Image (cartoon, rainbow, N blue to C red; front, side, top):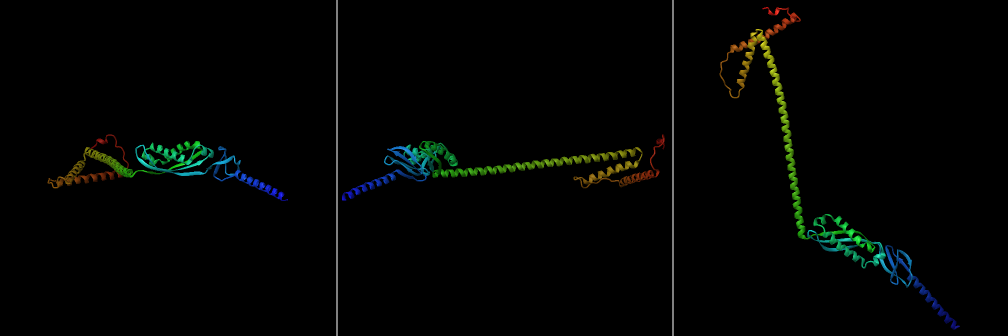
Length: 332
């Protein structure tokens, strides 16, 4: 009886040991991969497969987990370093890099210390890209620098199963003396622009002033031309009136009317006296004036007016005018 109990106890121990070993093997063959991470599986030290997020079973003892890769986007700072530009300006430059592992096996087995490799590659390309530019280009074309850096570094890290998503230059720090020179240059440039603007304003004002004077001269010339035209027209009308008056006087003289001669002479006489009186060089003058002749001329004018009115009245009384019979025009 005692032997059976001992045997049973040994068998129980064996069963318990087997159960415990089975549990250990189950734990060794089970792997839970968290989200955003991938594990590589190695069999006897050789890569065989990659475990994605979730619960997986591997062969215990012969398989083991190799590398645990973070598949999320990572970021690290690029430390400040000195860069010499194409125009020999010494700058202090730093930046930041964003990258993401796309292939866990290649990132684990194609390169050692992935982040350090990406960092050194970024720093050397910053010196290369920025060293091929002038200082003014570096300060005004950061987008171009970031794009060139991203293209170069991304192509270089593609065999490692890494995607570089962004490279940003954070600070570009020139030396103090260069900053002071840039400040003086900026001030001189602003003064230059201000001087140019003032000169342009004065030039435009002179142009507008000259244009105004030109338009004023044109309008004045137009006014003088119109006035001359009006004066010529007035003189023409006056000459026509004078010609008609002379014609009428000549006809009256031809008909034997002496009063017309008196009127003509009196008119000229009075005009001559008026010109003497209006002369600016002679305000006082003495000359014999025959008042009787002037009165006679005025009387002659009155006589002409009376004769004209008498003829008009007699013509109205006789009625319509009829042509005289032949030969009457020679009668006395």
